[in-house]
Figure (cartoon, rainbow, N blue to C red):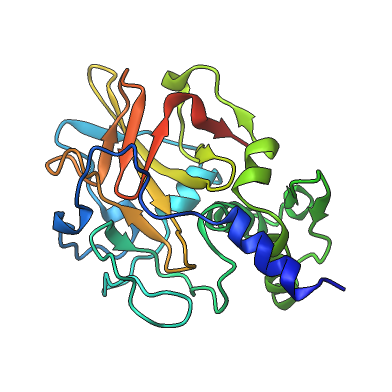
Length: 257
């Protein structure tokens, strides 16, 4: 049986922390999210001159494009209180929020991956590793109630530090694709998943990001704080830093499944 104090310590150690100090944004509360009336992620139009990159009908990218969006863009915490910072999100994913403070940043990445595999009935592929390299493998088939319990166990024992070890580094940043994960494993750490991509006639690419955060809260698509005209899309360019509303990532922190 797990001891409560250890679980609390584990949550603290694997948690996402507030805005990374390396970000050039001095006050993200001043950035207003763009109003949207979209029902699904796929309804969000790519920038002018860009087209979504076509994927396999059963692919992870196509599954994420069908994620439903809430009409209300307010981000709520796990305890049903409103998140103090309401300027980071472009849209909120219509997926039940965690009722505990376990489903934070890396947990959201794991949840989306697990939900996709569960929907595809690829049950044997649902597996996550904790920091001590112990694997949590789903063996309950199509049992949804047990699946939810399994995910809570994963969220309790796995986090950014362990997911960083589980995923493979992407050697060439230009090879970024939908489903890849920006991750800074550690204490503190953070993780965000690439949820969509588009390309123009010149071969220039843009991508979209989804995150959860700390405390546990609604899953949401983030704005691009450095380019309001492009938001919520980000350019795939040669710059080393990827500035998001509440964290700064670096190109060498890109990982894949």
